[in-house]
Image 1 (cartoon, rainbow, N blue to C red):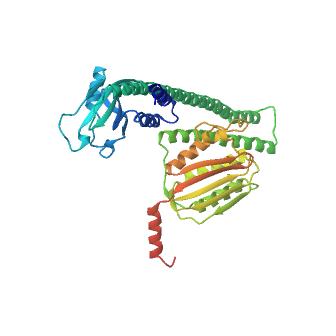
Image 2: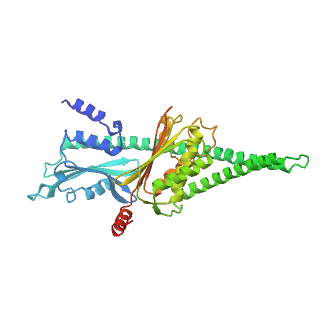
Image 3: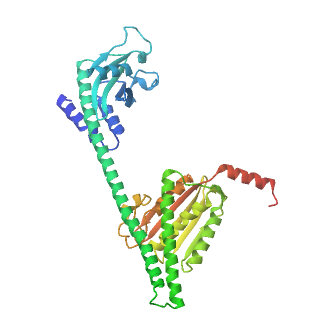
Length: 405
């Protein structure tokens, strides 16, 4: 292959052109580079607060079998960074039966976004790095610096975009909270002022209606404040959890009975396999399930709800499904983010905290919560909670010692 073709090939394989993370880009780059000159180990060092740190290291050739003991050129890298010059070194002229004991080193200075660094090539057993190999190594150093700068710039842009998005979410949250606080306070103030008017006499039925509205809006206000407090406690890791043996099938039946006691018209279909107890906080799990019911009634009004429980080897899995309008695909990745609300749902009251709190509670149980949705067909939440093997063993031993139970 002509030299020009080789240069063009390396330009195409520039690390900044690679897809994926920086390490994978470097892997591809150095594998291709090794076709043009041979080296066994490759390291990218950088200085961090006066200490030499490897940012990237690979044993590609003979060093793979003795990766831990083989040379990685730390001393040479320090010299390269201190001098800012290309340095090569050869082992003593002693015949070593083990080629990895005879490292030939070539180090080149780097200027990385995070500071000074060095690129070190290691070749075991020779031959020495000549002028041609040094030219290839110099080209590689230039490519690494350009690629590092490109990826650093990309990371910075991603961080700025993330910060912008978090800032926008917080702005939206403040606007939402202001609205959510003003709405119940407005009702409470309005109806209280009406009841206190001296120029009007209200009949008992109207008084009861006004007081009922005040009571409901007060409950809404308390729930809003509780969610804000729960969110803050979960964020700081200060949410207390009281783990006790809990049977999920029993808990689900109890919650459904209470929900249907308040909403008799709500159709709920249960498919619950018998389940052994798991260690869980019953109050917090009830909070999660009640929030899923609230969301279903808010965003899929009139829809039937299907709930199933399936014990598996290491987990018990709950599926909570409605048959409402579903959630747009572009919103699903952010559904459990703090303050996130599905666009075009502004006509429905909410803070964007409910599902965030649910996800944090499930994570505190070392479980997983996920969501799937098909627009026009409904939404399914899946909750996986781990089985405690010690609890199962104790239950089994108890059953064996009490066969009459």
